[in-house]
Length: 311
Image (tube, rainbow, N blue to C red; front, side, top):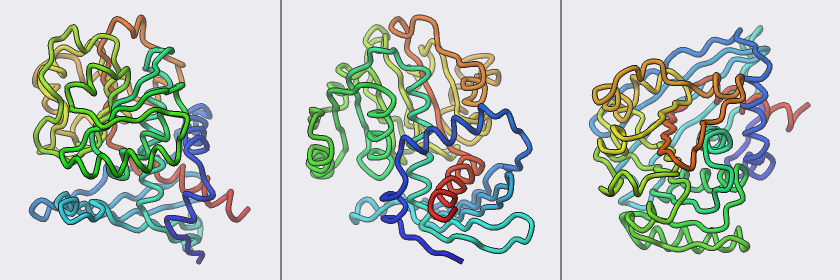
């Protein structure tokens, strides 16, 4: 069995490749995969997640622990391992830090949402939450659109400043600024929320101030988590999800179903990609894309990483 570190994965595999791998998976139309809903085990504020998947010649398992209060100690909130197996023999092929795969696939899902749903001339990005997922969505936004300006907000300003400094060194042609949540939303064409908050993190603005924006919600993955405020969920013109499981796993979507009708029919990423769907007049709408991830996305990305490294 091969072993690769988080740094080795991110060094050899790009966000653009990740987005292409997931998009190609749906474009093939092959539905012969097994991807059960993830198993949640709650331990106080912490959560253990078990995510198996089967597809093609491979079987993968991901075990992840989420500890939201780690951020207060300057530690990552997510830790875990992922193993890729030969599907026929079940022999392990590759072990790696699950955070690298999770960051790539989550950023890629949000990036595909941006590619298909954001207005074509989107130039400004707002990121709420400056952890691993904030960084991966910065990467994917730069793939999806010609982003020129990025606004950053974190409840701990020092972390936002650190994120800004790292981003300026990595992407010198983009302008970065630390903003309030209100300024961020008003100034951004695309807004990404990447927190593990149980309470909405968005400011209360008038519906007209949300017009022309795409909101990508990433952080809420449990029923007791909600990043997106009720007024946004109520007034959004269109709501999309990465996978049907988002409708019952995320507090954002559970709340949205209570506030509006027919959300069970929300388009998911598979339908968006296979039908090459783009919303009509996105510059006149508030569009929400909610992502929680699924084990099949992890496997598609992990398989692609493995084949690039070893075949």
